[in-house]
Length: 556
Image: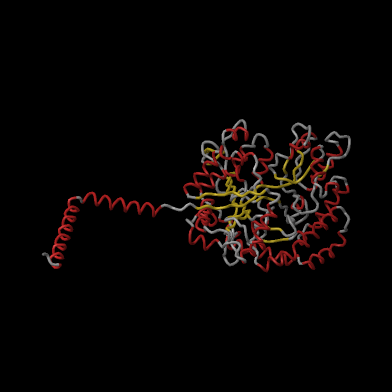
């Protein structure tokens, strides 16, 4: 009979033999074991590098329409989908019509709930947005960029569109929004500003064999001759100058050296000015009064764009203010063949020591705002999308579309491909750029070349092309977009602007109208200026100057 001790010994021996056999079996199959281990390792590595999909919700103004409905047939949309796929981003588009959007975005941001990940907050002003930032409704971006960005956003603002960096940073260097960006150049290195000026009927000048006006006196004589000769053949002296007398941004005021708004910016001299304190202001009003008295300026047009448009359609407008390359207004003139307008260089003759200025649209623009809200739970994904928005690939797609379809290289520059059927043919062939699909719903990055724009109009608008080339090297100008040279206002500045600007602007518009129409006398000038002083116009000018100084300190 076996004892318990003997049984335990036999069990130990059997267990040892089994272990040795297993070890021997493993030694005979090293390749299989190694392969299995390698496969397991690869599976673990593969699962580790799979990136998560970032699902983001966008809110903005977009009116939809045929283009949006057929977006999947357009080449730029396909390119955009490829970009999103490569970045592992999926987007949900929430779109509100342009008319409703200001109310919608104000309401939802104020409530601080039902927020998207990224929102277009362009209808809201600086003070409102910074207040939302204080409440934590808007995310500060610099910290997020430091943590998640691949560098695209900062590169666009600090290198490619460096003029814009000072427009998106608060006084303490914080960044709460990104923007649309635009730059137009001439001959690759020169900034191209688009001129705005007095436009005179060129076909009427030709019909009467009149020279192009060079001075203010020339302009008055030409306008009088239009009436005296009944150049439009109506049988009446109804040829008029459509002059906006309510504001200073009309081209004529600048011929007297005056700023284009109640507070205006001269970026070349880096000074903020107000026409009410400038030389030439009295001479300007006296000149306009003389035009009104002679029936050249029609008071019925004041404040009524409908009346002005009707006068244009009825072939009565002999001069007005617009872009020098304006080719659309002449199309409004009914039943007149070869009607066109001649842009004028700034007119001289305002008085001794007065330098004539012009108005320009800057060749560098920064507009609209896009924010990451507190509703965003995937901050890494939001920054990844911003980096995509501010990539070279996106910029090309948004502005130019696809190479070989929308554009090609000509003389070293991108050039749009012309199609005989115009936009209809392009649409049918799926040819598009991102702007055509999205507008400003998402960030819009543009860059253009003035020489190409002019080349396309050389034969149809030679006078306008000649004007634009000349005005591009003209140094005395005010911008029509003051905000493009002003850093974000501080809380104190915002409060003061809110208290000062509206009242001053209203009084300025009313006084401009009354003085131009002769309803107020220039003899009371001192009392007008005293009222502006009392309302704080000088303080408003100083605020603009301080903001401009801060802007240029950052955007050199």
